Image (cartoon, rainbow, N blue to C red; front, top):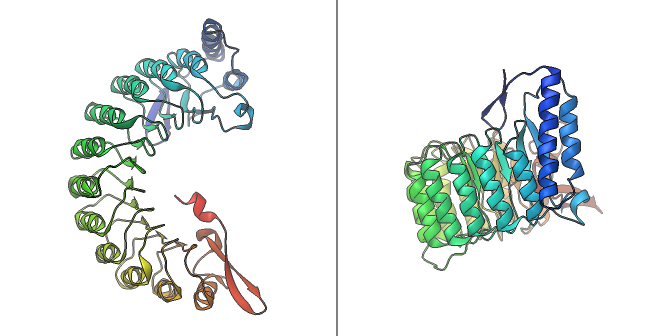
Length: 412
């Protein structure tokens, strides 16, 4: 047997002779072609080519196999996959023993295709990662996916990002997490989650010890009272499995941010917290500065596109300079910060050796701040490497300026 360690999980491939492997791959291709004929679809050439390449290998890959059928790929831009294509793929996946990761994002799969894939999940024992982002799936399709997950103990990562699954879909997923013990990564950002569905999710996560990465950004909230943020704070106080949490665009204010910071003082596992695109200002930032002084396990913290200002960044800078040696990445871009706050951050970096990634674009980058960051990036051994930030210095007529590099686009 070969054991793969792909996406933090193990898959067992039985070693077969060359003729046995060839026969089994040929059988899978035959199943797929037959399913395509049933739905009156031409087989996707990339799928056939993919299976033929595996067929030519003498033994299974120890890392499993990834099949990328994203609708954003050039070969699919003029004709994205639809529900019939998904039905044919689902029939093959029901018997598949080689694909561990499949990307079906940005296709027109819809509820009908999702129902077929949900049934395939009930039979498939090898798939570890399923990306269904932006696939026009609603609550009905989500229900089928959830049923499949409840009967599947191998799927580790699921993305439903951008599908309008709404309140009902969110509650179905929460119920699924009560019985599933394999899913470690879940992305339901931009899926119209409501106060009720998010509260249901946080309630389940009080006891769930499997989910490690969760993205619930940009919900459809109807209240300004920050109830969902308070529930996430209560959950983080007792949860000891989450390592990454995205709460972007939650309408979070200083009160909610303070509640989160207080709860994280007792949390021993969270390493990445994304609070971008909220309404956090100085007071909420000061609460996190106090948290950073406790040197918690937090390694990545995003305040991008908030309102922390100079005083908020000054508080963070003091904590970074004197008490914290765990934080490695900080986003403070687009926060109404002037050269006063940016110079305080630059000074803090000189006494802190662990903070390696800083993102500051979108603030007031005047001469003093530009000079301070240029000094951090100059020399043979710069304190701040250009690929670890979103600005780069340049000089015109003896004056230093900072230009945007775009590295932050790939940092979240």
